Length: 423
Image (cartoon, rainbow, N blue to C red; front, top):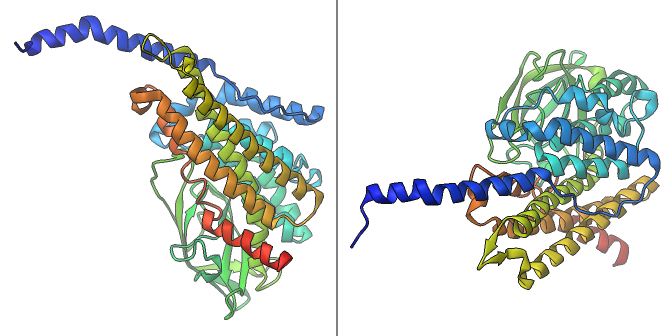
């Protein structure tokens, strides 16, 4: 005999629904309490103070609005001034230009912590500090440094990095955006895509072709007195995405945009070197981001299986198979962080970093993606609901092996350096 639908509905409301709700509430309670992976960090007092302030900001200001902003793809504009007050946007900018003058290692630590809290928030910060400010520090003249670096450090003047084009992603040297010198100014034409921060940026580092040879590329500073690069001839369009939704992801179109002579950054036809040097540091930063993202999924899954989820009359954590998997994942994330930390220290020493930066990004992003995807399965069906953040946080690890050089590009870089140094 089949039960009538009315009876089933009543049974669910009276018996099953309260149990489901109890499990959800118990799980959410434990996840909101949080669990921080033990990194065994041992740094000086100043670095500890910076990390403590970042963690406090994440817990007090960022975490409470994460879910609503990510769900709607809303830019966290109210958090930007708070990050600026902490000095985060000028973290690695020298003190003489309004920054804190901190090292790559400190930047990687901050990247890990921001990503642990909110991946999109990390991207907003990274695009400004790692991608927009560094080219000016690396190749800018003194006037450019004094004009733009204090603005970027203030947080009131966000920057972006416009290199990628629809047909020039992995092969960055094949870009088609052009800059021609006419009547005392540069004329910029073409388009860029997948540009983080463009919708809210007031400055863009734009790479354009200025000669006939493949690497005849120059870098330019495009500035605006309003957010969104609102200058004549520039059109910015937001691209909606399913991951890291609170950060901008944009197309930029340049229609005969006039730039002054002094807008060029460094020497003519030497911009490709600037782009690659920027990506070396950026790849370390993304490695740190990936580790932070995966560590959050790991911690949330560990809390869930040890405090909330039970099967066959015992907590899932009590199964040795589960314990061994988490032990493996913990080891792998620690190894990924150790490599990222090492690459950061080598960069700070001034030694060549191209191969090691590519190695850190390749290993950390692949590890993070796999660990996050595997660990998220421990949420079971609950991980696919809107009640938990598990799915969104796990999906945020997926683009890390792609941006700032896809994994195969990192392999090419590593292999090229092996050939250069050993063959």
